[in-house]
Image (cartoon, rainbow, N blue to C red; front, side, top):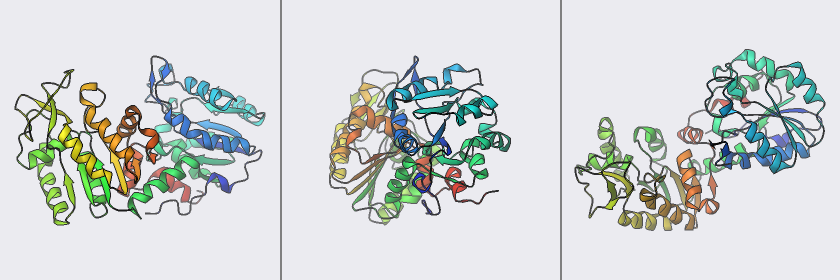
Amino acid sequence: MAGLKGIKTIRDFDLKDKRVFLRLDLNVPLENGVISDETRILASLPTIKYALDHGAKLILASHLGRPKGPGDKSQSLELVGNRLAELLQIEVMLVEEPDSEATKALLMGLKKNQVILLENVRFHEGETKDSIEFAQALAPLTDIYINDAFGASHRAHTTIHALPSLMKEKGIGFLIEKEIHMLDQLIESPKRPYFAILGGAKVSDKIAVFEKLIDIVDGFIIGGAMAYTFLKAKNVSVGKSLVENEKLNYAREMIARVEARNKSFLLPVDHIVASSINDTTGEITSGLTIPDDKMGLDIGPKTLSQFSEAVKGAATIFWNGPMGVFEKEAFSKGTFGLAKAIAESKGVKIVGGGDSAAAAEKSGYASQMTHISTGGGASLEYLQGDKLPGLEVLRAKIR
């Protein structure tokens, strides 16, 4: 893995009086006009503070959601800008037309403790098309380009890829630096024993991760709906549980390959089941099988005990994917219980993926994790060995 080889960090530049274009991931969830989770905002603060402390004229950029067009005010960054202003005790000026002359004048006249925040870059139709024209309109605003949006770095979008391809001076912020260092630990030099905990809905979403980790980890712990595909592959009755029938052969082969390497492959031994995902209560199965009229929606207490015991002595833990439908209280005990066990482990504990990060936060144990990735899909793609456009362009030569 190339990691950060050949990529500069923000520390490598003289920022004083330079126009610094800082691409952040401020894609936070909004509910009823309120930011419901500001993790990504908080994660952006160290790089912003560093740039301001070193005299940069700062222009911030991010996307938010999937806006239907420039008029979609439900996806405006106004609330984010207001929160940044509160947290940093600075003036954040939201600009709707980044390529206007007014914006250029505003940028040049920035005073200390003032920054520009571009309105949601996805309001511009060229952003998701990696438009070189949009990049050329932004380049005159920029002396130094810094990417600190790890969660968007797997996308070849204008402010992630086309713009830095035009820039000579470019690098990364502290968040990306930390993300890559943490994820590299899972691949290059993990302390042992090393367990990968994989959950979520589909085996197909995790195939590349399985393939990357099978020769690295000491064992897998499998939960979530994807566990029912593996159980069915072992001829266990799983009732109405979600199963990827087209992945049964892969599941059988994966189990055999892991066992052939004398590694652990832990699957649920009991379940919390209900008639429907809409039910508000569940019942515990007496054993491994699930009744024909029920579906598994969480791991059971015996499974939680076994999984918790396995991670207790782990020196490295990678957790990606919840154990059940944790958003509903009746089906949250497995995910939150495992989060507690992971948190109490003395090993390196890295949480990757949006749902896992949300589960860690909701469980109350997030502060005890070594690292919770803000990257979502980017984290998995990096671990799989995929090249991220937002990183690779920072190694590239100017066009």
